[in-house]
Length: 165
Image (cartoon, rainbow, N blue to C red; front, side, top):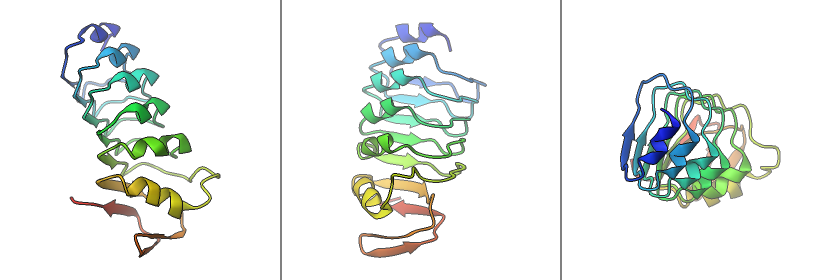
């Protein structure tokens, strides 16, 4: 993809699946009408901060890439189904958590999570705040702690699946 992609302002769907992409042009943020974006099965290592400009985006598949983190601008996306499974994400920064409450679905499976940010003292409060807004969340547990979510005792699980499948 080149920077010229930003000139296609009326574009509603973009599919670049298995194209060997390693980066996304920053001009993608100009595609304010884009509703579906399929970039799975590439080699993308990071997302441009301009991703927050995709205000109409409803579905984003970034599975099977080489992402190591998510940009803060992901917080600006609302009512989004987001898949970032099978990437290289090792941790989630706390600035992302408020944005998760705006998502419809989030799939973080099969990422090599190492640990949580040290200032996430109480997983119970954070998880409750995030999960109560998300219809479906598949999140590998990054920590070996015991927590209560909706009166359910959870300890040592590989992932949490909440909501309707």
